[in-house]
Structures are given as structure tokens and as C-alpha cells.
Amino acid sequence: MTDPVKDPVLFTLIHDYFKVYLPKLTNKSPNTIYAYRESLDALLDFVKSKNRIGLADVTFEMIDHKMLESFLDYIETERGCGISTRNHRLNRIRAFYKYAAKVELTAVIHRKEILKVPLKNTTKPDIIEYMSEDAVKAILAQPDVTTEIGLRDQFFMVLLYDTGARISEMMKIKLCDVHVGKTPTIILHGKRGKIRTVPLLSSTVQHFKNYLKVFHPNEGVYSNQHLFYTTQHNEKHPMHQDTARRFIHEYGVAAKEICPEVPDNPHPHMWRHTRAMHLYQHGVDLTLLSQWLGHSKLETTRIYAKADTEQKRRAIEKAERDSSPLAGKLNASRFTVSDDDMLKRLYGLKD
Image 1 (spheres, rainbow, N blue to C red):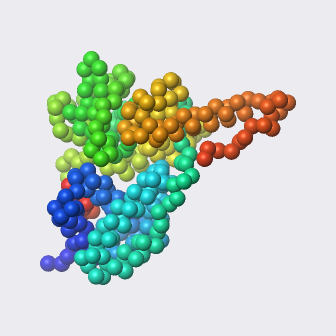
Image 2: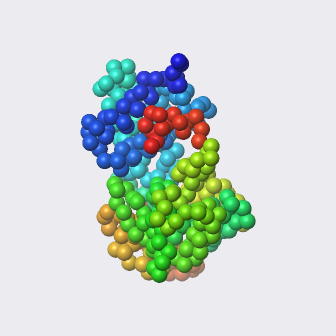
Image 3: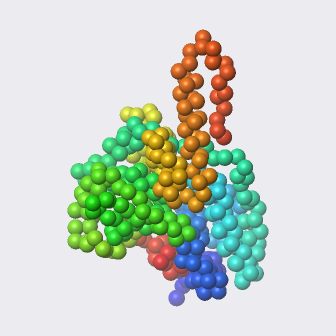
């Protein structure tokens, strides 16, 4: 019987890393394993996309330092991840290659290639990208809600905005996490196993009920079924992040034609920043906002206060006439299911 993959050494190492080494030999938590697996899974998807091949054809040789740099640039610019997230992804990929080089001599050269890519300097603060309220409304108006897909897509974006959830948190939501009683709330499963409860607007609850009628007509409130799913071979699977990124981008492109305020790439994490900024601008206290976003440190949340101060400064600058005594004194600088699915399950990249 022929091997299902072109590079059996690579995929055997991946399998043993996620199925034996991390859970049994180093006793890593399921959440830690998920984070490491997600990083490597995203890299492999990027490699196969760049080479226009299937997952089974990906080899160690394809992942050189140039490919890795392209991947890291992609998650930073296209996916809207910050520098710290970029560095976390790189460290997790490095960890796999360190393991591979220990147990397989031929992998040493591949690890040396990966180590050519340095961590990115984080001393310069990230600039917060967020949308105006008009831009959000324009994008939400794009899906055709007379169709099932349009209904799903609009509800997904409504919930993404209302909760300020990370894209990874959206994919983990199950029906039992949503409570639409007297005080509607949703439970989000965040980083490192942290759980937080976020309130829901009444309008979001109505979207949720409409969505349930179409996508979960026979499910109870205690169901462990994922809220958002795709159907492959008559089986339901949790929606993939790339599916959401794709339709959010497409609706953004369409909305920009009628609303110039819509940014070129309104990626999912920008929706999180957008909701946080809008809440702060409407008077939500930073301490409460920090808890709502699931930040472990209040300092992380202060970036929204800094960004809002910059926005106000720009508005004042724009309003001032050249003849104003303030003209010339304003500083304009910025603050700074397919065969691939089967293979991923086989080699430990998916549960």
C-alpha cells in the first residue's frame, strides 16, 4: 500500500508531536496543544495554497525561510494579527522543528532554515485599526438574508461585532453557550482556557432566533452542537476561520463601493477592535472594557484610549482653519471536507 503523503517523515513527526510528545511526554494542556496545532496547521495551509497543491504533497523542503517569512507577513497583514501574535506563531513553529530535529537527524537542516527567521521587534506599539459605525452598518447590509448563507453570514458578523470576540472564540461557540433568558448572554472560550460571559443586545438575540430556525431547527438549548458549522459529506463540522475571513472580506469589498469609509480589508480582528473602540467612545470604563475583552492586563486595553485620543486630535486638526492661532502647532504624526481534512485528522492536526 502506498503512503498517502509525499513526505512521510514530515507527517509522522507531526503525528507523534501532537499525539504523543505534547500530551503524554510533556503533559501539555489541551488548550496549549490546540494553539500549537493551529499555528502549524495554518502554515501548512499557506504552503499548499502558495504551491497550489494538496496537503499530501507538502514537504519539508517547501518550508524554507522565505516561505515562513511570507506566511508570517500574511497573518500580520491579511489576517490583521499583531506583532505579538506573529511572534507567538513563530515560536510555536520553532518548537515543532526543535522536537523534529531531536528525533529525526534529517530534520536538523530544516530547523536551521526555520531559525533564519527572527522574531519581530515589538518595541513600537501597534496602530489600532477600526471601522466607523457607518462602515459597520454598510457591511452588515451586504448579505442577502433571503438566502440561508446570507442569513448565516449576517448573523455571524452581527455576533462578531456585538461580542467583540476573537475569531477563534467564534468557532468554539456551541448552542449551550448562548442564553437568551431575561438577561441574554453568551459564554466565550478564550485564550489559555479562560472563559468569560458577555451580554447580548436584544437585536442580536433576534438574529440568533432567526438563525436557529434555519440552521438548528431540532436542537435544544443544552446542545453541544457548534453554533456555526459547515456540512461535508452529510456531516456537520465546525466552521473554519478561513471561511469567515473570506465572506467578511467579500462583503467589505462590496460595501466599500457605497461607503468609502469601509477599509480595504475589514478582517475579523478589526471587528473586535472596532467594537472595543465604539464602546469606549460611548463611555464604557476601561476596567469594564478590559474584562469584557478578556484581557489579562489593563495596560492592553489602554491602547483604545490612546487611539481615541489620536482620533480626537485629528478631528480638531481637520476642523481648524489655516488662519486659526492653533494652525501649524498641531502634530500630525501617528501613534505609533476534503482529503486534506482527512489527512489533518489522521496526523493530529485536527481532532
